[in-house]
Image (cartoon, rainbow, N blue to C red):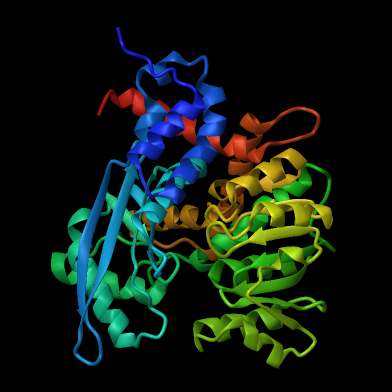
Length: 451
């Protein structure tokens, strides 16, 4: 007879911490999911007997490698690269590549773990993975970035493939970097295949991929508000970040009649009481993408705005908030401040931007709160659609993709309702997303046996 793993949550988490020392981000991600899953699987012996949660919380593999490259002065530089392949029960590993000095094995393991459930929620056949390097592209020349990307792919290529693992972009990795990596992959393998997503439109990319994460987060927000008979028209929004996700979230809120008050970067945030309209959003896009500028320079172009150095925007009163920068940027006190100032809904555009205390605060207050694995799944959903287009050797029209994105986000919202309805008009979207994602992956794992 199979030995069950009927342990309580504290005992389970002690085991996770023991197996993953000095990896706080990964432990935090597992804790957030396990808190909801334990109750769900309490009476489901097959999940216990097959130790499903224990297996999902152990990546299939973590590949670590050295990346050597030369800077423009001929100096040899050495970085570390990783690819975390967490779970491929429902499809090839899928998840971004991040280039940032904060990248560690712990960060990538947490991202790959989250990605597993996020991808399951989309309804598309994609497993969970994540990769990256502690390389910092800021301040590097275009040729230095090209050489680094080529060196990174020279090692990574042997671990990926269109039916094995399909990386995408993430922080520090945009269309340019994807192009350099794909070029090197094609050069090494003599193979033109859909092994990366986020590609240029001329060579296999998909329309609306750039907009998808930010737009999707707002579509999910609109779905949540609709459960209360409300919409975004006339609502004020506080947004963190000023990159791809943040600017497109801002763009969609403006399109739906909302007023965006803030954007930010690592230096601080800008508050524009007049609202950040489409013209201003376009200025930010150009400033950040082409000039590689800082958000503080916004106040030079728009003097009625103010810049708040070294601070996050959560103290600005608002109706809705969208953290779109990075992990653990919204803390417990920030969550309490948002609620005290009348915030009705939070939709995460970044991955795990709210720390565990903040999550508990939002849940206790019973506001509309969407975790990133549900609300920011639009990006990977369109990446999945790009994979489909690559397989079929075709491109879908923008209107078709926009509708598919809306339908996928509505489907994720519906899945969250199925498992997160707590009665009395309260929907626990965290619980709903965790259980819906877990169940799909877990049932596939049961079907495969112990592998």
